[in-house]
Length: 257
Image 1 (tube, rainbow, N blue to C red):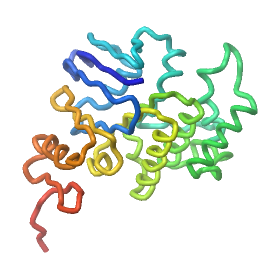
Image 2 (image 1 turned 30 degrees about the horizontal axis):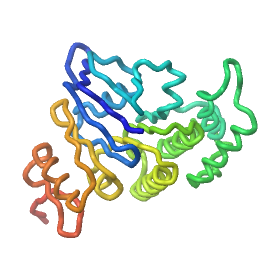
Image 3 (image 1 turned 180 degrees about the vertical axis):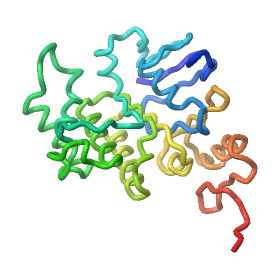
Image 4 (image 1 turned 90 degrees about the horizontal axis):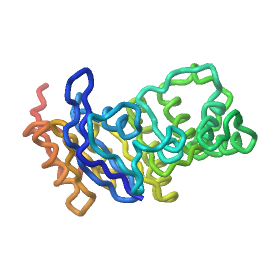
């Protein structure tokens, strides 16, 4: 299965955000979406999910047009994590259990089997202690992890995550991405997530999509992945953006004391 986007254009409030975006991702892997603020990263992810309409273009997953699937069918194929997980008074376990919704019959409610899946997902993510805590009493980072547990219960083959590490501290960012990387490899899933830090893409990515002026450039993982990514990002981030000899991105500047 692979995600293919062909000639996708999206306008919001009569302003063109994406223009003829075309790319195809490999069947499985952890892929990062990079670009400056306002480049259209969230718009692209939401358009793939079917949450906003496109002006034209085609989005297919496993050869099937996502735009022609019903919302329930689409939810069985795609799990979406938004930037902001809104607080609610339901417990973390209840929230995670909602991942079973696309597989339930009309009027059916999640049962004990689904709750067991939720508890197992929370155990996998290292957050079983949050199970009985209300979502509105969790930090933004904790809610993000519970939302990922919901995605594990949903068990969709394609995961789309909009800045999932933004609310996490440095260590939890690494923990989150290591868990996600292991999940993708173990379950042979595909995941596309937007981030601001190119070091995360370089450290964990099987490839990177870079949004440039409403269009995308795909940089596959390779022995020269870091240098190729650096050269692709340099026009966006300036001539001082560089890759160190030991493999991390930074901006050159003279430190003044």
